[in-house]
Length: 215
Image 1: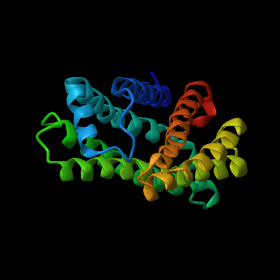
Image 2 (image 1 turned 60 degrees about the horizontal axis):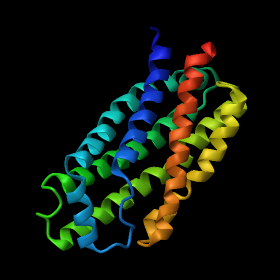
Image 3 (image 1 turned 90 degrees about the horizontal axis):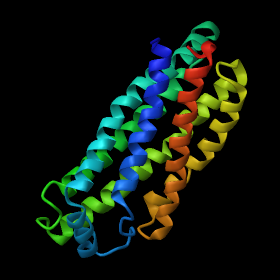
Image 4 (image 1 turned 45 degrees about the vertical axis):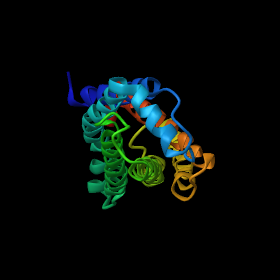
């Protein structure tokens, strides 16, 4: 299997692992739910919730492989034209990925002892922290999706349809603002950006699997 196809499949698997974890977790408490409700949710989830956290952690491995293959045509084009779109895409992904990992760590800390061994203040702080970390991860999406869209529009490094789609995803990424400034259900708007990120990665994986000029 070529590295291009391996990167493409890694993008698809990143999406699959995240979606499985999402459904395993079920419907979490709202952002403004009391700490006792959060503790009950985590305790009831037990090892199932831990399994979901583990899946999202493993998914980061696939994301690294996907990005390594995804960036090849961008860096090639940058070298030829003296531009920096590839660096822009990589920088945005590094910021988003760092926040994503921090959110996973906060989730892991919440469920490590089963939920009820943490006091209410600690549960509240970690629950809010993981919400904000996920929101910041989504807020970085406009950087890399927008960078990819500009490079595709200017240099045609990937199919035009993926460039247009990247603009849409970049706009959805701004929903991350809701999760960083609101502790109410308004923060759930960030889910639109999260869905956009997953669809963008899936589409990018398909491009790598089908388009031989992309690597």
